[in-house]
Length: 91
Image 1 (cartoon, one colour):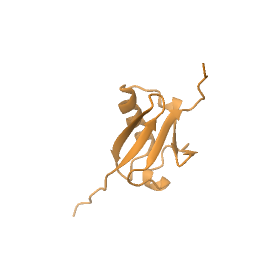
Image 2 (cartoon, helix red, strand yellow):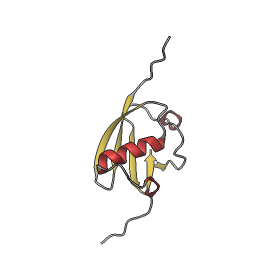
Image 3 (tube, rainbow, N blue to C red):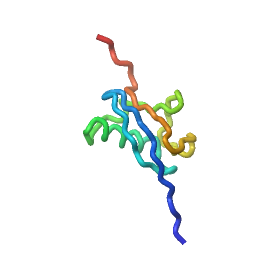
Image 4 (tube, rainbow, N blue to C red):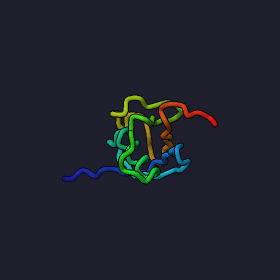
C-alpha cells in the first residue's frame, strides 16, 4: 500500500517585487522551503540570502522556519507574505 501525499496550493506575496506566486506544497513542507521557493520564483534568482527575509502568516512572523505548514494551520489557498527582515528606508 502506498501513501498518497495531499498537495495543495498556497499564495505567497513577495513584497520586494510586489508579486504574488502560487506554489503547490504538501502539509510536510517547511516554512524555510516555502520561503526559498517563493523568493526564487518571484526574484528570478536561485541564490537569495534567505536570512534577509521573514515569512508572515495570519499577521504573525514565523520565526521557527523548521515547522511544517500543517503545524501552523495552513490549508489550501492560504496567504503568506515574504518581506525583508529589516525595515527599508523611505526615500
